[in-house]
Each structure stands twice: as structure tokens, then as C-alpha cells.
Image 1 (cartoon, rainbow, N blue to C red):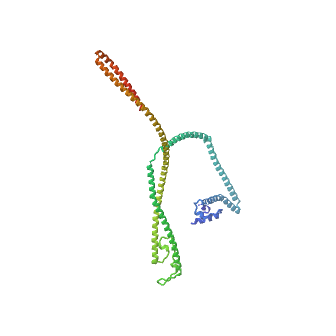
Image 2 (cartoon, rainbow, N blue to C red):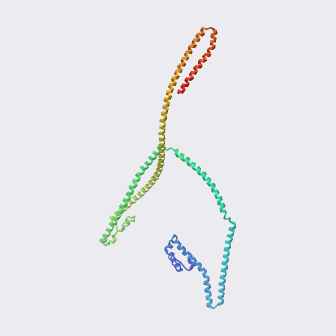
Image 3 (cartoon, rainbow, N blue to C red):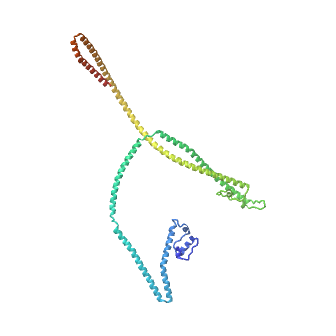
Length: 441
């Protein structure tokens, strides 16, 4: 499009990358444009230079449009001057001068129109927009809001700290079952035992693949040496076919192509004999077997990688669990040691207290023995008193029988009081005995 503006008759061929640098050079572009830059126009290294060339071409076209009227005026004026037509020259001068005046007036009006909206926009903005001091008020409001947020965050922090303390207490009071630790250790050992054969098999397969690759490389080198020797001998010999036509050594040469997959293309010869065909078949079978082994090896490697990933994930999981269990075990051991120390101190205190209680028990036993002896003595006295009272009552009854009826009635009246007095003395003796017995207990 831009080249058509420069020259409407310019036609570019199919190879645009070759003609564009030539056109720019003819237009006087001061820098060289390479074809590689045009081939890679979208790359970040070549695009800035091409963009600069396009900008230069656009400025050139704008300058050409501005100078076109001047060139037309000069051409017409020079033709009138050569023809001697002064009136036409004067008319052209006036028209060109008026054109410049009209352009100046139009430019001035455009400039005024551009300035007036700008000034009006500035006036409107100054009259409608808020004062710059509103930032201070907004900042103060934001500060108050932030203070409220700070109080809320402090309260939230207090709640979180309380939750943390509660969680610490729960962790400290948590009990761990040793059976779980043993079970996890057994599962870890089981996984290690299962993955160990896979790892060994992976190593063996990798070693076999490496040996196979090394053997293949050695075979390729040997094949190259044999092909070289064969080609040298073919150059020396000149065999003759059955029809009597001689063969040159170059026709029998073999070109070794290791990258080919077809056996005939590997040797690169057109001579077909039984030995060549058998060699080709062997090479093809060898390639097929090698490809099968490579496929099997790739599948085994994928399986091994998958097993390694599973083993790694499982190992990380169990290592983390073991670390947690180990930490808990250390905490439990520390607690057990503390409890053992406390138990030792408790045993010492118990022994000391036992000795004190044994001494006190011995003293109490001695005092109780004395009290029991005293109580026995008092009980014997009570029994003796009861027996003597019984004898007295028996004597009184005998006296009652021998005395008159009046005296018997008087004695009957005095008998309850005497019996009550004896019962009171007996109860008092029992109370004293029970008190001594309770003190002994």
C-alpha cells in the first residue's frame, strides 16, 4: 500500500523480501534492511528496525504531499514565464499567495478551536472537582476506620491465642498407642521390602540396556570396518557376470546407512545374492528384536518410574508419620522420666511416712494394751459388783420372806429405787468401757 503511494506503477514480484530492501535503498533510506529481518518480521530483535523504516516511509509520503502543490506552482509559473504570459504569472502568484493565506487562516482557526475546548475543560474541572484538601478528610476517616480494625484485630488475636493455648493443652494431654507405632513401622518395612526387588530389577534392566547399547555401537563400528574392507577389495577386483559383461568395483560397493530401518537400505547395494539376503534378514530380525527390547525397556522404565514415585510418596508419608511418632515418643519418654522421678520421690516419702506410722502404731498398740488391761480390770470390778449386788438382792429377798407383810410392802417400794441405782452404776461402767475401747480403736 505504501509503495503504491510512492509510485502507482510499481509492481512487486512474488519474492517481496528481495525487492523491499532495493526499493528502500532507491528512496534513500539511510540504513540497510536485510532479507533475514523480513523473513523473521515478528521477532523482537528485527521488528523495531522494520517499524522505524515504515515510520520513515510515512513521513516521506506526507512530505511529498505537502511539496506537491509547490512543485505544481513552480512548473506552471515557469511555463508561463517561458511563454511570456505575465498576466497568467501574476494570476498564479495571487492564487498561490491566497492559498497560503487560506491555509494560515484555517490553521489559526483550528488552533483556536483546539485551545478553547482545552481551556473550557480546565475551567470545568477546576469548578466541579473537589478541593485537594478532601484527601486529608478522607485520610482521617480512613485512620478512624483503621483504628477500629486494629481493635477488632487485637480481639481476634486474643481469641486466636486462647485457641492456641487450648490446642497446646490438647496436644499435651493426647495419648499415643504404642501398637499404632509398631503397626506403622511394620507397614514401612513391608513397603521397603516390596520396592527393593523393583529397584534391583530397574538397575539390572538399565545395566542390560547399557550393555545392549554398547554392543550395538561396537557392532556398528565392526560393520563399518567390514564395509570399508569390502569396498577396497571391490575396487581391486573386476568380476565378470555369466553373460560375459564385466562389472566395475564401484558397482559392487556398499554404502552403510545406520539410520535406515529397512535392511536393504542399510547396506545400500543393488546386488542380490543369498548371503546378502540372509545378512539383511538377520539384520532386520536383529533390529526387530532390538526394537522389542527397547519397547519392553521403555515400559519397564515407565513402570519403575511410577513405582519410584509411589515409593517416594509413601516413604515421605511414612517418614513424616515416623517423625511425628518419634517426637511424641520423645515427649512420652520425657513424661515417663518425670513420672519416675516423681514416683521415686513418692516412694521415699512413703517409706518415711510408713516408718512414722509404724512408730505411731507401736505407741498406740502399747497404749491400747494398757487401756485394754485397765478395761479388763474395770470389767472384772463391774462383774464383781454385779455379783455382790445379786447376792445382796438375794439376801433382801430372803429377808422379805421372813419379815411381815408391811415390811415386805416397804421393801417392795424401796426395791425399784435400789434396782435403778444399780442399773445406773452398771450403765456407767459400760460407758467407760466402750469409751476406752473406742480410744483403743
